[in-house]
Image (cartoon, rainbow, N blue to C red; front, side):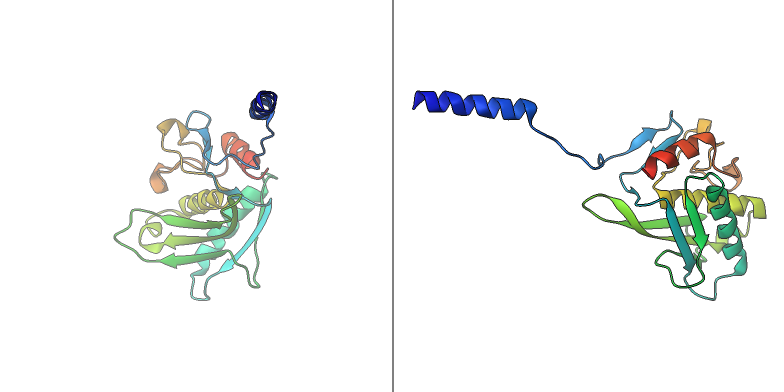
Length: 190
């Protein structure tokens, strides 16, 4: 009995030390403010995506800025996104909310077993967006599309030249993804 007990303890010890571990993706943020990118624990499931308008009532200007934001991400070669006139599960929409301080909001849905984004929606707040120049609106759209990849907002002022800088509108100095944005996106789509 003692021999069996010792053999069992050795087996448990060996299994504890050398037990196999598997992790598809670590749950938690990757990157930080210093790195110039933060990837949330949810991330894009693939390198391609499409979108359509939620309704025909969306002003064409918001379709145009989203097309421009998508073009800027396509030009990185990391993320291929396009407007699909036919039905898509990913949508853009607008609202007019004077109580919100957000120029736009991106909502993502993901699998809980691997945290991969499977669906997203961008909603532009017309109340605030009309105060921006067209170039600033395009930057906001590019920023929001960064969220569809899984990139998070950055708030350190050292990151105000990155498209994912979270204080948008007049505070956003970037017009397209920076090298740090591209690094984060490359990691997010792996």
